[in-house]
View 1 (cartoon, one colour):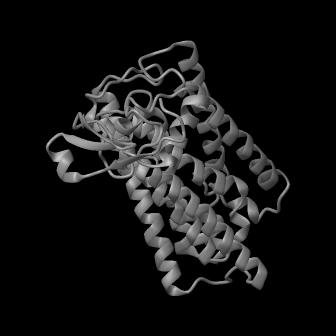
View 2 (spheres, rainbow, N blue to C red; view 1 turned 60 degrees about the horizontal axis):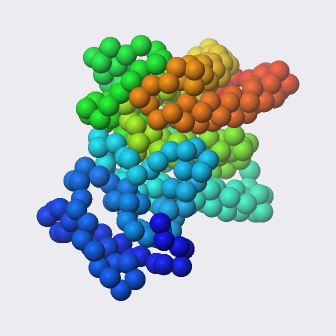
Length: 335
């Protein structure tokens, strides 16, 4: 590949794509590249004769994944190639950056002004919370059912499944699951609107910011096979988590009804932790028994799940072993 000093302008022209080619300018020369219609523009640019293509951000992501995870982003899945928010890492990286900046600026403003958590949400905010949690509860149910149905259709076991780009329906559900992680940024926005900074912890922001990027990688490279287990289990946990918060928003400040109907928050947090234990088990199985899945995906899953498990254990100890009974009634809303 050429040196950093050799810029390339990647001209993404839809009309050119329709006839099967695009133009790449390298220095003063122009070259026609024949494209596979199922290949993402990101992958095509990485195959070009220069280091710079599409954007420097795309290339930075490529080098990071190549150097630290040993994933070759020049080999995208044909299932999701060309879908919105998948073909290039730039949209998701910018979305994550914007999310972190907004959370930091908004929470800093709340602290500086000295705003207190709302004692009672106004009607419009309660309606927003109800609709948001109801939508994610239903979407999680849809994804959980769809992924399990496809897994049964393909004869998947829990671990050790192979996969290929022929699993179009599974890839579709994995793609929807990935996009849902971007929408879940709304969890934090709701907390900010309620001025409840106690819930916006490092774990909360870390998880929301990182999980969307992890699932971009999976959607881009391998939205099939072993990916089903994590997506299915997480979807079903989300069904109950968002149901819990839907009930909490409906019951509001009625302490007697909260004790009666929301006693199971602690157990939901425990299931969230068991989820990460199962993901670590899946990763270990993948490391010991290689499959057609990209070989370093299990390593990434292991390290990422371990980081979340450690943070969750710290949260669990602080909340359920050291805090007051009132605080112990809520599960952690992060994933």
